[in-house]
Image (tube, rainbow, N blue to C red; front, side, top):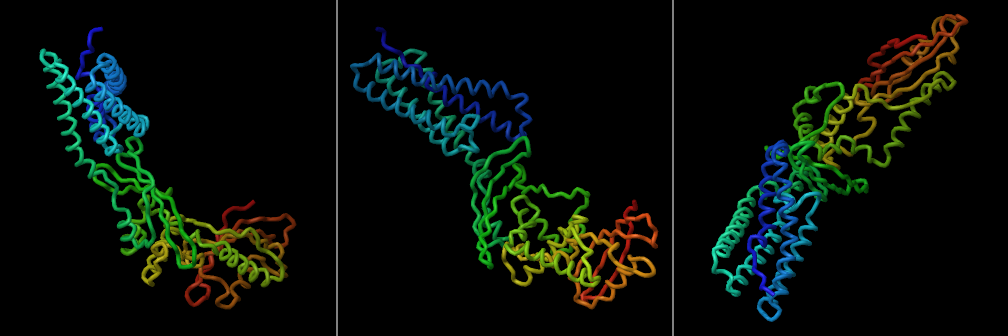
Length: 430
């Protein structure tokens, strides 16, 4: 049987494939994905070269080993090559996520795999020399070609350490601490984005032990633009209002950071307070009790808190968070201990409910104005500061046909707990 001749070019195919793939990947990534329209043939070529390289490397080494059964050196070196090829294959499988190893997401694995396949190639050159197969022109070309591939691979890995450093995980611990968050932040996953946005998405978990014994644990995502490192935000208001125009300088500076995706959970973190529902029910029950007692009959129902307009809700949250921080409240950077009364006082929440004025007995005049007069007669401290929207129904002037009106009534109480304004605004009649 004719001795098997070593082909350095075929042993280089895997390294060549990864060189092509990562060069095309770099161009595509830097273009935000648009270059793929033109570069897809090169992607397919790199896939094909990598697959063929894996096939040839096992086949050629096995054939070489079978051809020189009596050559101890070839047997040992081929065994080493096969072991390394198997390790390299599993490295590729380990880092495969729909695509071969790339220099951004799989840099450490790519470096190890490149070292493994470079050693296999060097052993192949050494075997060629020992077997005396390096004297013809094709063998000399193979030496030069193999050496060039190893050099280019090493050079590429050295050069891409720069973008590798550029794309390393940001120091989220420092960023969270600079906002005033005292807990622990961990990066649990990261991936590159091209279609949704051009950059990197980091999945984070944040854990903080709060002063009331609650363990706050939030899962959030940081999205960082690949070009300028900007932390992205998906915060927007359907009304189209620019919230920052409604904030003072301190609130605006805080909101500029909090609106980033990784911190946006703070805008609702007060809802994690264990006594929130009890607090809301207490306000609803106290309001219902005072009004119903005033008329000696239950006339209120369907209590709920509203957030209209929604920008007022976020303005109230930012205002109270700034106050909490100034008082030294560090729980969730001042966003945790925001009460329902705080939001009502800052006009961020309204208390909405129905009133059945048909149950009010009035000898002369409208039950609506009788209702107003009795409410105004209440002493200060009767209600929490805030806006109350009441939808009322009543009969008018003894007319047998029932006239129903949905009314919007706003009661705004000042700091002296006196009625500051009363507005009766008909919404619709039927």
